[in-house]
Image: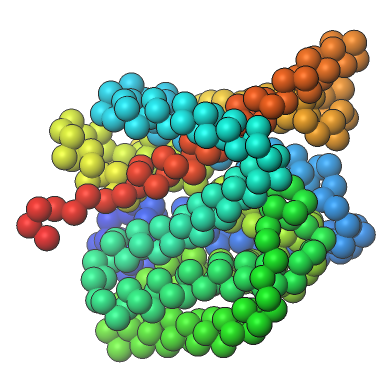
Length: 379
């Protein structure tokens, strides 16, 4: 029976380790998503589009059903939760309003600047999420060693920053974050300088992890998997291959899938807390339920169904009003209606793009607040 609880430490030595969810769920979430992403590279090579644009089916599977959908998963953490909404109404109410107002002001001045700002906001979010997993694993283990924090933080940050600096130093590439030209050029020497620092940080992390495990038995395999898969996927997807397809599958899957698992786990597998202080503490990391509860397939279907429908609706509006690239995906829409709707939306594109970007901007901003652990007064 599949359960959404973490196993008791007395049951097996593997389960005594500092997992976020449970051994099986952690391994599937972080290791499994990375293996799927990497397996899609030889698949793409065999099918002949590894060095071509992302094919339609891959775009649906990765961008629509994972990347855009995981943005709407935030709704289950905030906007579909009345208790959470009442806890911080100003934050949750003003964030989308300000996102639209600021986005609209930037878009009205420069479309290129709008996409650049959005791209760098997304980059910051992607980097911080990977660091966040490492921080959660450190918290779960109770690892408060200062030198260890510097080693862990350096490794996970450089695992993402070095590939990004290489990207910026070798423009133009055959792929971009959101829109062509959304990144600025930096001198190639920047990547040359950072490269040895990157490899030193990776070696330092491996040395500390092995030393602690072999000497003290202080293994933290979940954290190791996050660092390793982040380094491998970002390096291969950005540096090794100059490919839109390779970048898409290696970047999106390991980012969106773990986040959706986290949201589901928090919403339906956590212990209900009544007090604000308990809720704040629970939001620091995925809590361990004390009772065995079977994963409810109906809830999973509801969760995925809602985020997938919302993602599909958003992409339909993007395509009608801005891109006009994926009519094949919305072929069920009568041509006359599609053309009329597209013309209407295109005329209002000055506010349409900022409006459609509100969910992802809101997701980026709120994610910085939702999982932040409050320090106790005594600490």
